[in-house]
Image 1: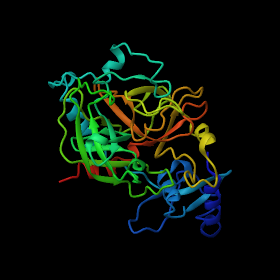
Image 2: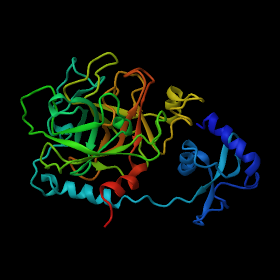
Image 3: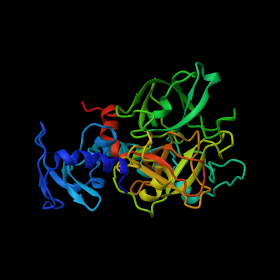
Image 4: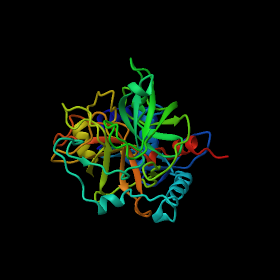
Length: 378
């Protein structure tokens, strides 16, 4: 659903800069003067992520072809494949380390979801969730503030994507009285227990990299990378997750969110890692929950090229405060026992409310940016 603010923007610029008239058709070539001489094609604006991105970041006005009803048809650069070669190579490399991939790490991962009986609890829920098993989500990281390890205030989630980098939400890096985000704990599913059966590892965060187009209070581009002071040692409790390279998801796919967040709107942070299964939510339905024409947080509503909506229409299952930055994942379709991260927990409304889905930052949209930092080419 196109947003009224974007319609006003397009109407204003089309009055002075219309490409042509109603004679143009979808997929007609159109001309935009650029330094790179890229080819452009007439497309509905909601099918042109580049134009939507420029609009939300106030970078440029779209070049108009025409209107189709109330839908702007704009000059859209002919898409080129987004590089995901490194992410795919690394996924294959991580898979080769575990027993199902021919390696030596006796790894459970997503196979746990199929074979193990889940422990139910009415006391600790990620809002309708269940307790995660040890080694089920070895990529999960909890991030915290504090000068010393002994007094860490755990705040956000993240996912290990290499031996030195954690992927999370940009807003998790925002500093206040607590100072900068400083610590990453890996391989631990119960942060309230001193009895450790998983040999957790803790690392200091030495570099915080937020996406250059993240501009709060806007919630677009809510993605960040955190570099650790030393490589982590991989084992059955600590292993990176694969990054999803597909731009399309289906409603049949089971989306799994995990975190130590609040177990309800007024509940404390959970000590135990929780998981919950969510459904993909339609863009129109999601916008009915979030979009306000004058909102500084969502100026053009939900942007499905860079965001995902997930939840349960009936409510009762959701991520909550404290789950921010954690992964939204699916079982990897190719590599047994592995997960593929499709998104990052970004924001929501009242946890677990009916018709109140959560919004997640879509990973595939940012692969080139991630790869350029985590696996820079030689």
